[in-house]
Length: 268
Image (cartoon, rainbow, N blue to C red; front, side):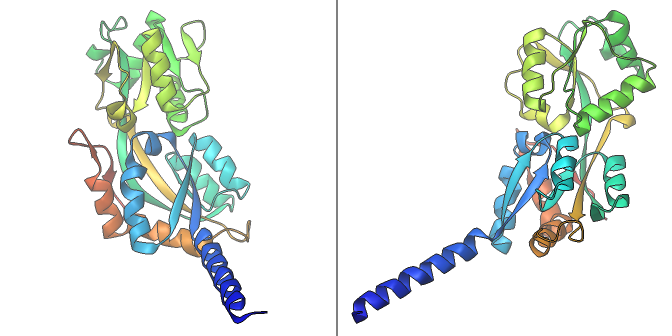
């Protein structure tokens, strides 16, 4: 074989090996639609990637689906917002560690004329009870997401079993649910970040906020390599630790939409 051809083939092999190594420098993160729809990941992931050289490929679904993806071993890391569910996930051996990362809150959105008069409610419990009493249209995500799980807890607290034509379970993410609520002129519970970033508000307005029970905590979980040895544990640990680090927490603080901070870091 001619020397020039040998050099060419060696160069191709070298490029192939480099590209192969580069292609492996990523993790799959199962997370919520709120972190994706709000624009948070578009803001913070490039900072993590610049620091570590590790890409993060996000699968944005409801929290329940994110748990299922991680349970099957189809994600290397998990960032969701259902603290009770996250703790059970660790207790059941699917994750080895859970840590608080950041928080925001849920808000109640509805038609500007507010037929259930929830803007006058003193508590979230009163607001949910008023919607049910008025049988005002309500758009529920109905997708076992962290938001949907929280919404169902609030109906229960209000002594309401939501049912009937006024209550629509959509089985969709936060953005599509807000779109449907806008088309229906319906009430809806949203995380604040997705609402602030939402562009198709039509006649919808933020009508109730501020009750401490609407607190919305996000957590990062280290997944168990004992359950799934193929997981990219080392790179996932770097992502987890970066989220909790001063740099990661500052990146979350710096993310704003229209000058408004949407997530508040609280790693311990």
